[in-house]
Image (cartoon, rainbow, N blue to C red):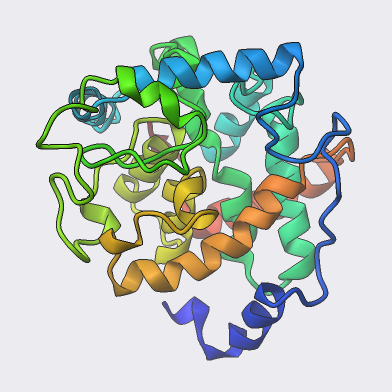
Length: 294
């Protein structure tokens, strides 16, 4: 954790307390408030149907099967930047705020972080790569349905917290009425640590596995952000804190800072990809091998 030494504490606290830095816009690129799942529109109806399907199908058994299959990392060998370029083809159906290609969002996030945290290059790179697991949508990765790739994430193996968006659809999930899984702790225990908790399967967990198994040198906070950036029940509603250990609590501070950039940098401001590419290639070389197993 040397990269997160005491010298950064004041800067971290300043942004947590609403100090100067990235200015949060009032509306998303559609002119609506961010993450507004109740606005009547064709896109919102599609988002709700997405979550209905996701909530029904994300079971403990499903997550275990996906982690076993994709944890083999035997699909493709490619660089981080090659993966970034693959994402140009996809739009996230679960996101009510964004209809731009994914690489635009990645660079908007990374550049907004870079402006406020010029010395935290690990955080800039985390902003660039946090969504790369969405390549699961690509035919070379099995072309998984969107409900198995994107959307808010949540623990499986214990009760589904009511703060999760469109919670009502969990009633059709087979685990909902399973006494082994439908209590506060379910299969877990107090302070067990999120590393020991199964999360709904998607791009977050997949990219975490890719980074970890390819022996990235990103700090633990970077891996935590990659794995839990869609875990809104935790970092927006403070749910599931009873499962966290001390390391999780420390890393959550950085996740809450990151989330501001991940969520609110979704705008029509374009990034000059060729201009910033050399900088991010240098960070990739610093923290990752040239080719990764995916």
